Length: 208
Image (cartoon, rainbow, N blue to C red; front, side, top):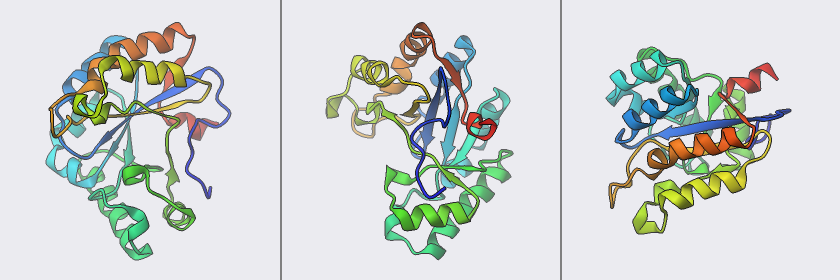
């Protein structure tokens, strides 16, 4: 596709919730519980290293009907890698997720969101659609970084539009241990529904 998609193409009143998993899994139980209660499905971008270290968690994500995506093997900045190294990162993560019982194809998200035309083209040649986001909650910054449960919620509400892709994380902030995305998630889902949107997985891209 030659670009990093920031929204669901051709979407009407649909938005997607996505979670990146590359550090710890501190908030996963809370996030999955909320999604289950609200009967919402999300897309989880896993690094291969995370999938290897958290195979039981991969099982649970899949068992609850969520979608997986590829977030590289070791979360390196792709713009600093050669094409061969990029292929190694993507194929390594793909193999790790497959070994854990899931399949991340065809969705890929760049570590740190760092990309240029070369790395996007390389990812596309490997059979993946590069998926960015239209809203970053910034919950990953933690309270030490100035984020709060309310700012996380407000960023999503203010960024709502047809086809919006929301970026959140399942790990805790390494400095203060906060899990603001998980804390704000019940309110986020309620506000999205109140605004008349339907929450979908990224498979909506394939259907469209």
